[in-house]
Image (cartoon, rainbow, N blue to C red; front, side, top):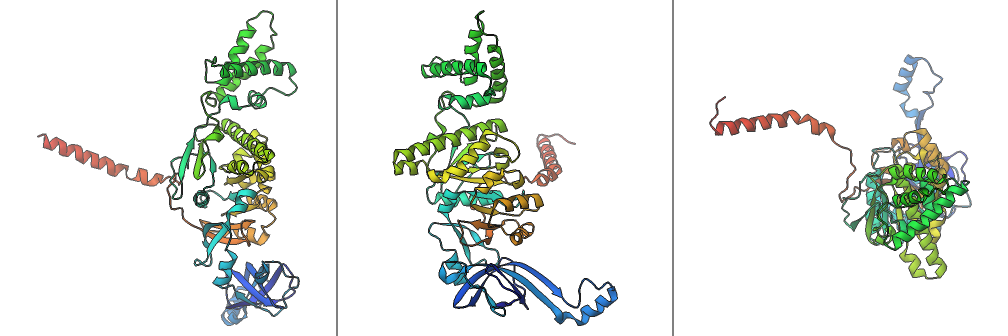
Length: 500
């Protein structure tokens, strides 16, 4: 089906066309010339009428012209060139001739485009529901992914569909679950493994604890007292002499005993005060009986770290601890030369509320380790997925390392600019489509897909929490429930012989 004809000057990257029909933005088209069959995507459309131009200010004249000048209407559009269908989507070396016909791409061509080695089915084309959209799993796992959307656009459903598809490959998925959406979820292709948000201090190093307590790098005396207490506390844990689950409390008690000595340095009290302040914040974080969190990760499971009951500072500590240890473990496996061990340590981390864990305009331990895994993780089998409803507040460096993106509806211009600056593949024309996407519709781009795609994401078939609460339905029936209870009480009274 011919949808338009090339006009004006054409280039290797885009062409302008005129049409007498109305194609849809996001539709794929083919242009045949010079022995090539080039695939393109309609990225921009406008309607116009030469007789009804903006320079006419007479309303009655416009009315008259509109009645007789209907045939002067035109449709102009822009097609982004994606590549030669018959040459592995390589960009052509010559532009199309003006006057060349543009046709809708047929289903066979599109099905071939979305045929990948390790398919993950996200949904179907927005404009052609009979064409499934499959993306490749390996580029997602090794080159990272961002899922971005405004609230209510279908972000959680998209994450759930992705997780369920990854489970078909027995990939160990690890979710930092900030709102408890996944702890009671049910996935058709795998089970959920709940991991407690507890750290055994035996698996923490000195610098981690030092940062928690906020001992400055230039406070050499404080650091000396702190290091001594840290080593003693570790020994007490190892020998079973610790009388508390709270590692900071154990250190505090050690320093307290030392401070009782009249000859002790009174600056020990400064360290004790810092520990005391930190205990209020991190009192529930430590458990000397907890296993190493990484040892609890199960393949073919959704491993969920439930962070819904901890504050942001504790969540930051847990994220940085897990990512640091996971990266170090994978590096050790790589340096040992044991490829099987390296692959066994592979994990795909999903970070909900990425704008909290990797904020754009302030520092945090979790942000630093997210950045490091984003830069280095692909070499060691670690993948990241950053999920956020506030893209503008996600760290730009981390976001720019996400070589794949699923972008649902975004309305705020600052969000759009931030995402576009972090992605080379997101053109201005595609950005302009973001506010008009319906719930569950997304722009998919990056290494996981051969071409940018407008996708209607599948509806998740399992069960999860996190949908909007139906508050109105809850309260609008209060009067009905009260009336039913009163009627029930009256009936019971009548049955007992009381007369009202």
